[in-house]
Amino acid sequence: MLTTNQKGAVAEAKIAAAAVELGIGVLRPLADERYDLVLDLRPRLLRVQCKWAVRRGQVVVVTCRTNRRGPGGFIRRTYEAGEIDAIAAYCAEVGQCYILPPEMSVGTTAVQLRLSPALNNQRAGINWARDFEFAARLSRLKGAHSSVGRASRWHREGRRFEPGWVH
Image 1 (cartoon, rainbow, N blue to C red):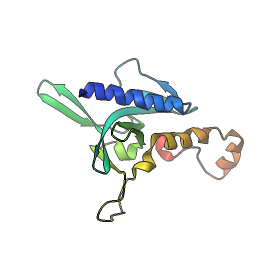
Image 2 (image 1 turned 90 degrees about the horizontal axis):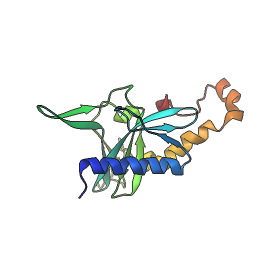
Image 3 (image 1 turned 135 degrees about the vertical axis):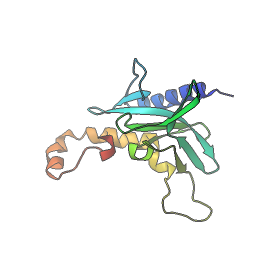
Image 4 (image 1 turned 180 degrees about the vertical axis):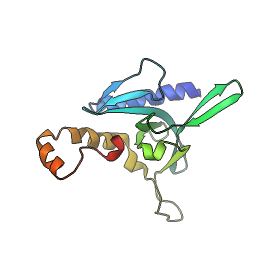
């Protein structure tokens, strides 16, 4: 059984590998930062905190806080706006990486991503895991930057190259 540090290291490695497979540059901070990796989406840099996610039934649970031991016991803290740009998570049971925008991961303790429909047929307020899959989401972000020829038309129309959560 892996320790929490080992799980974190595996998650970080899986997320970095997934980014490299997409042709995205991966950087690591030299000092202790709130983020684990920086993804180079060219020209945008994305500060990413990596997490180990667990599967509970048909839900992948991504914990969006940090835990560390202090003199008085465990210190639990959520991430604040400006500390990270996204949380990426690896779920070993599913074999999948996910990426969450800050509006879902900043200031909250956990996010649940549903793998299949709920037994009670609930549809409202569900975060579908497929909508946050790492490869699909980052491919769209990376591809948006390669549209240089369309830049002037996009700017006239008031459109961005990437979703607002990247800014």
